[in-house]
Length: 343
Image (cartoon, rainbow, N blue to C red):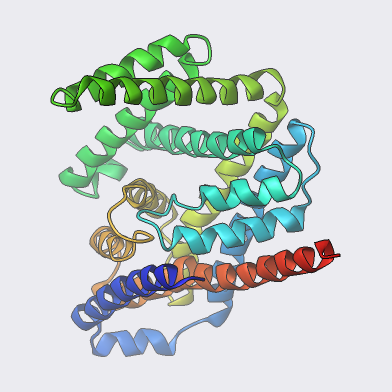
């Protein structure tokens, strides 16, 4: 890890730590210690194992999507790939920053760079589809239940669901009509580049055309050759998010509280969408504040801070640990390969 990466890692961890300390300061009271006396470690281990299971589903998604394009990528290789991705995601704005690592590791396993890019891009599309369908489910089926999060977050969920759905529709439609996507992007960029020089605008338009063509090739590849990979990908994506979303309920049970599965699914959906917005490294600070605000509606304030701390330990600090271990494995592998190539 170079100096710049270390700087961003410390910045990310620093943001998270400061916010968590503030949350504990404002929520811990005498009753908190009574709850801690009832702490059931087995439920906390269950929460941790559920997170590991979620990462295993992510690895299976990569494995099956790669297989649908004719590549053999082992489960444990895919799992180590996912772990390495977690470290980079904790350094970059938002949590959606590990794509280059996944592409690189797939390429090292013999996947063509174009196909590796196709797999990673399609992963994000599947995430959007699952989260979009989840938002639709909560709004149409659960009715007043999700409105308990408050009008501000309700409107945010509405807007996010509409945006995600629109993007997914455009992406899917662009498989058949790539020119439509080109026109939309060019119109949007034209509004921001009105004062640019004509040559600079032309260069940007050329880049847009090239990237849209690449994206079209990606989607077409899976539609024609990797349909089974998309279906498996959807299944494992849904299982991944489901596991991640129920972890808070297991932590609550570990603190002697009843689970809030439905409410937590709603809250976690909002957090997942917010975490994709590039605001801070790894979404640190933002995740803690959002979780505190939303879970404060459903959870006793005396254990709210402890709940958020335990949740972040599992889904953030543990991810960094896994990422560091995985990075060491990759560095050792690269060094061994380098030594093997020497005459």
